[in-house]
Structure formats: C-alpha cells, structure tokens
Amino acid sequence: MNTKTETRTDTTLGLVIEGASLALGDGDATVQALDNVSLTVRPGELVAVVGPSGAGKSSLLAAAGALTAPDSGTITINGTDLATLNNAARARFRLRNIGFVFQSGNLIPALTAGEQLELVHRMAHGKTNFDPRELLAAVGMDHKLKSRPDQLSGGERQRVGIARALVTRPPLLLVDEPTAALDRRRSQEVVALLARETAERGVATVMVTHDHDVLHHCHRVVEMVDGQLINP
Ligand SMILES: Nc1ncnc2c1ncn2[C@@H]1O[C@H](COP(=O)(O)OP(=O)(O)OP(=O)(O)O)[C@@H](O)[C@H]1O
Image (cartoon, rainbow, N blue to C red; front, top):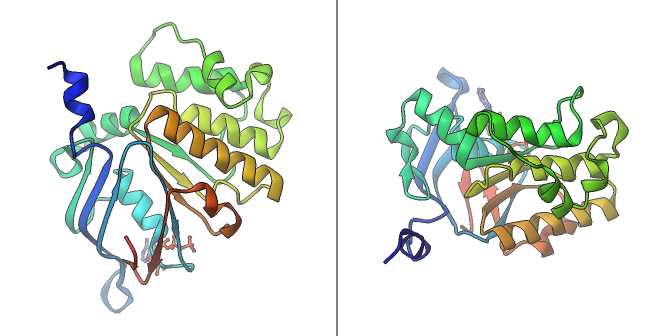
C-alpha cells in the first residue's frame, strides 16, 4: 500500500481537539477561556465557530494554531500532537501545516500580490522556483499579480490572503472573521471561495465569525459559550 492511500484512510487526519482547557489571567481575574473543548474537523470540512464576545473563539483558534498551548487536553493536526513539539519545531510545523486568514487580509503593504505568496513559499521551503499565478487564479486574482495591497479592494485583499494561506498546501486553515471588513456581497463571495477551496484541496478549515449570513456555506456550525462548545 502506498503512503498516500494509508494517510487518506487515517482517522487522525485533520484537526482533532480533545478535552482542551485553558485558563487566562491571574488570581481573581482568571478566566476559563477554554473549558474541556473537543472538536474534530476532517479534511474538506468547513466548520464555523460562533458565539458571543469573550466566549473563547480566539483562544480556540490560538490553541489550534499552535500559538497557545492548552493547560490540559490534546490537539493533533494530521496525527501530530502539538504538545510533542518544542518551540522551534512548533514554529516550523505551523509554517508548513497551518494557514492563517485574518480579518482584513493582513498583507504586507510593500509587496505585490504575487510577492506575498512567494515570500511564504520561500520561508517554508527555502529558495525554490514558485509560480504564484495558479493559486491567484484559483481565487480569481491572477490579473492583480503585480498589485500592492493599497491598489486592491477589501474583498480582493481577502482573496489574496486566502491564496497566501494555501501556499504550503496546509492540512489546516484557521480563519478569523474573514468578512468583518466586507459588504454583504463580498462576504458571500469570500466565504463561498473558502468553502470551495476547503473542499477541493481537502483542507480542514475552522472559521470564527459573527456573520450569520455566511453560515449556509459551512458544513457545520458550532457555538461557544463561556469557553465551552455547546454542540461540537
Ligand atoms: N491575555 C489574556 N489575559 C486574561 N484574560 C484573557 C486574555 N485574553 C483573553 N482573555 C479572556 O478570555 C476569554 C476568552 O477570550 P477570547 O478572545 O478567546 O474570546 P472571543 O470569543 O474570541 O471574543 P471576541 O468575539 O470578542 O473576539 C474572555 O473572557 C477574555 O476576556
């Protein structure tokens, strides 16, 4: 059996969070940001996380993104337990295996759309030939290859941000409020694009959002309240 077939049938594929808890703050001000959270997101699945402000959604993304270690519980990405990685290995793992999409694209102002993607590729794989056009075409942005962020609309910046997050072909995509800066039509387009790329590339995608108008694009919607997932 070749390795590809083996991994395809592996039930550890995607994001698996089991019983993660995380307290933030000190003393009386301690808050249980994550309270025994379990969540599984399989390749090709787009899962939305909703919930009130302060419910722990950003903490969940930070833990899944190997930016914060939970106090207890386990988080695995394609079978790798994040707790087994030291700082350097975790940074390397994050770069190659986790794509991040932020509220307004978070692009580097001085770089063109193509260069944003090339930079990530160079950081992850060293100096190799990489043509950003295919990925930019996938998000409908190949005609803006040479445009800098200030020459793009909010929706276009978000599209480039999505393409950039996919450069390393990560198994996990973490998306924080992707429609916060967009009008209704652009919001629909961007989340439809996320859903399509998630399915076509077999990525496990977690999207935190307050935007209930985009939830129909998602496979599942889970709700956080007071650090707990109430319907994982
Ligand atoms: N560094 C910190 N120190 C102490 N408490 C914190 C810290 N960061 C977050 N918190 C608290 O942890 C809880 C969860 O915060 P978190 O940012 O994860 O919520 P959220 O659901 O993402 O909120 P929002 O929708 O407003 O972004 C909140 O009560 C918050 O006040």
